[in-house]
Image (cartoon, rainbow, N blue to C red; front, side, top):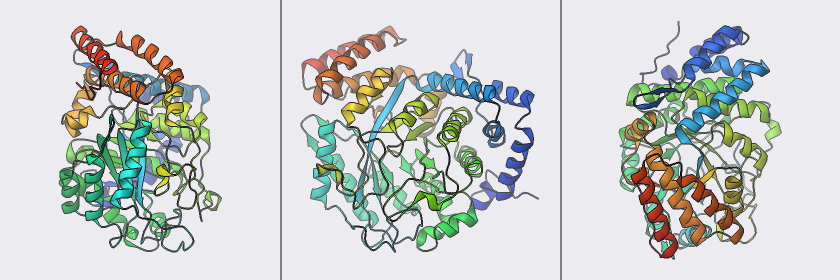
Length: 482
């Protein structure tokens, strides 16, 4: 008998192995059931209502049937539906961010990460506050406004006090027209008290990747260190929300375990957060295992092809329509370009995955967490996005206006977020173009902004946005927001 209970606070009950295995059996049995697949696709389709656009989303079982389906025609229909849902809730906006690695000291023995404790030849580094300041200025000089800080788990070298001091330093740096307006945090599972401290420090989203939801595999992949504790790690988001953080980000490292198992577990985790806290994950990330110092991805036999990867992205977008989706520079330009259409709403640009990497002229390899496939500059990525008819957005307004957690989801679910996000994206893109862009990128960008202003539904909002954009171009006034 299944012990599955999405409202339970016990990891092995809200991520029930027996429920996942039953789900995978059900999906396999129904992968050619075209009538059921059509019903699932119809359920997920956006519906116009008096309040805006509504999307039902899917259960982990329904979404797993879509993922198992091998019919090319049905897969194409999934891709079209994913694109329709993406446009309905996120439009053509793509939020930009960069990771900032503070320290690669780590006490864990994770077998897939070069920061693992036994790796004695990787260069260990921890940034001082002065070095953090230099890194942040380098990121501001590119045009970044949003960072995701990363640090290994090490209570001696990277205690919570170090993380909090680093956040304070990042927010304090005002360089020319540059400001980091939102700091997201990706650090190890911690206590409710520490999550409260992070909330008080003004963080945006707390991000923690599960790596794998398969408990037995999880314990083998994390043989030593505090991360070995599957339950403590898996229950971290509940502690974060108890600590007042209402925007949390999920993710698995695809390639460690069988992808269909991970997919079901990921959606069950999202369902659990919705059931217990009334709000699902703010973001879902889709990293794939990549080569790094001391790590050969070929040692893991669960790697997934680009085709399956794109199908996973489309199925996640259909299943959890209101959740932001993130893809990193682990992936190539070609893969990222296709993924944007299928549901991705946030990407990193000009990332360095090494500690202190942004102040180095050449990309350092001696302390990288993983190999970066997309090595273009931020200016090149921004221009590429615009040429694909996307709006690169440096907006952080919702977080600073208190539109987080269930308040953000409510706006997103009734379609009203378009009246905030679209003009905010255009105003922050104007900032980027005026302050940081090359002449070629400016030319493409200002033409795109002119075209996109006409799509703002409310005349009053459109007029204010136009006026603000004129002021950004004519002066040093910045940070207008709805």
